[in-house]
Amino acid sequence: MKEPITGVQLYTLREHIQTAAAFDATLERLKHMGVRDVQISGFGRAVTALEQKEALERHGMRVCVTHQSYDRILHDLPALIDLHRAIGCDALGLGCGPKDARGTKENVRAFLKQMEHAAKELQSSGVGFHYHNHDFEFEPLEGSDKTMMDVLLAESDPALFHLIPDVAWIHVAGGDPAAFLKANAARVKVVHFKDYVPDDDGRPRFVSLGKGVVPLEACFAVCREKEIPYIMYEQDNGWANDDPFLATEESLRCFDRLHSLPCGA
Figure 1 (cartoon, one colour):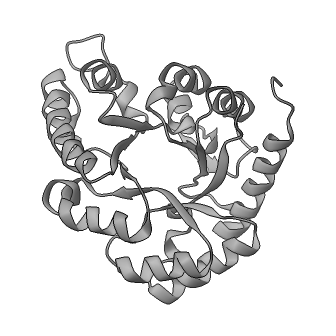
Figure 2 (cartoon, one colour; figure 1 turned 120 degrees about the horizontal axis):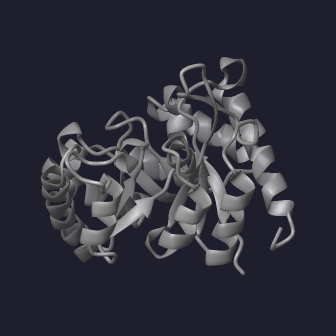
Figure 3 (cartoon, helix red, strand yellow; figure 1 turned 120 degrees about the vertical axis):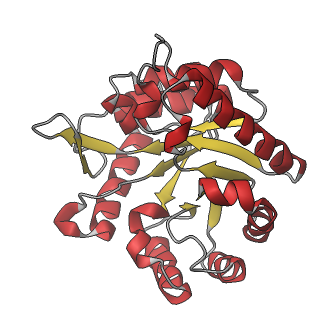
């Protein structure tokens, strides 16, 4: 049984990576926290491919996946492929599908056709396509008892359409994130670990890992059992003392605790 590699989704620290100097300084801080693996997201084109490559190499960091915009995937794919080659990353993620991909089966199928076309071009360059979910993918489609996720899973090619399951958003949608991971592990290279507590309206208020209601131990156990390679901590907002670095330190301690659990726990 292979232990998953844990690290940080840099979207959590997005306000601290908007220039090459800030990106470099943030990687330095993460290195001192013991982080060696990251997901790149949150600065668009603000830091060039060469600046990313140099900073990553300087601090001994590896990139397991990125998040890119829907628009760039449609219209700037060659540049994205060059970026991934430069930083040594073989996985491109879409952080969120467009609104017009939702609602009906026809919308989902049109979106899926676009993404699988891009995924074929990526695959020919040695880069995989990975889709990150929110909660809306688990809502019934108009005039159907199927959800967007049902259609994506049933009608996509597993060799082209991979997943970045976000365990918190699956839980917000009323699903069992551990069961989802177990059922779809063959499509998963990276899992997002995120935690939350519900507010008065039942919407998520994000918190550091281990301080909310998401069954992280069960999810971690599945990642171990299924040998899912990577787990990235992500927190959209709600950081402890409004400090994403403090929240990151707290969440890394949660990872330490999860790694210390005996197999089968």
